[in-house]
Image (cartoon, rainbow, N blue to C red; front, side, top):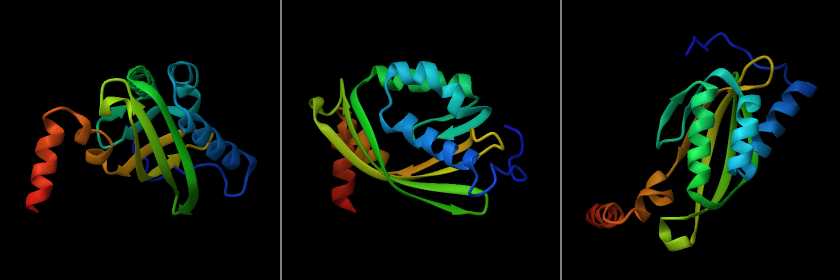
Length: 157
């Protein structure tokens, strides 16, 4: 990934900025396989960086493939964006995610909350996507064996 410290996104208050925010929220708001296949490279810059606490990925083609694989393991996922804040050159999206996975949590809906730091490039594409959320509660607690071990460790703390 190229240095992003000097990269500034679209001008504040511009139509490009509002479109970038909406495009990001709409994309992740209800991620499915078709959306991942058709829209990832419109939302993410070619040299984008993504870390969702489960995996670190570089480049929009790899991010697209990751989202496709993720979507294939889902029965349903919705993300409701509660608000967005701006600081420096970064946007902070606060969200609530409801996920129903095919092979984890016995098909029940798992709710998690989190924040995503996003930096857009000048064209309004995501350059940096860094999630902050409890992936133990959202995923690992529901993996057979792993979940029991995590709950045991938590009970000892």
